[in-house]
Image (cartoon, rainbow, N blue to C red; front, side, top):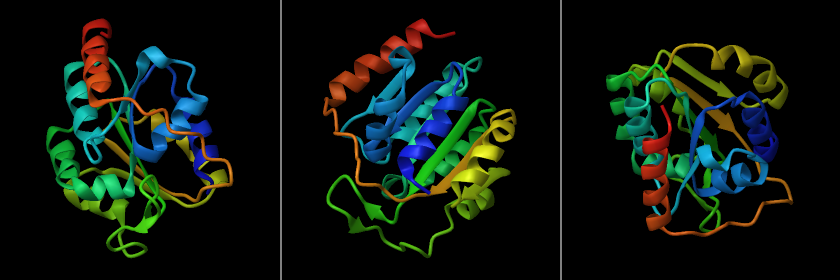
Length: 188
């Protein structure tokens, strides 16, 4: 499935959720999102988006929190899946874009590419609502129902990239820190 098209489907179902993104998914998300005040791109902290999203989900239980993660980033902090399962935030939806490479840094293969079952890891860690999609049409049909379930929810999207890759809007970790404070202060 095309990553950019998958992001458009997530955007369509977003409603008023806070969206925490990192690495390549951030590029796509910034290209389609129209709610910048609820967008939190995590710059310079590969593997930390799911942990930041967990903290926000626990602090703001009335708000749905979506995390857009990459497979390489998740591998650098795989323990976050176990922590999310343990804390069991009902408002957290974790999307992982599995392309098998560290796309942002040059396309180097991730360890275990093609062998890892990310949804299986999430399920065996205690996240009951774990899904994997490799077909855009099935994902588009199923996502509205999945978004209505109680979390935590884990969704692995097996993606590829088209010729159009939105440019990175590089900012700093300081910008991310400021945005976290703004979201925690303004969102109920």
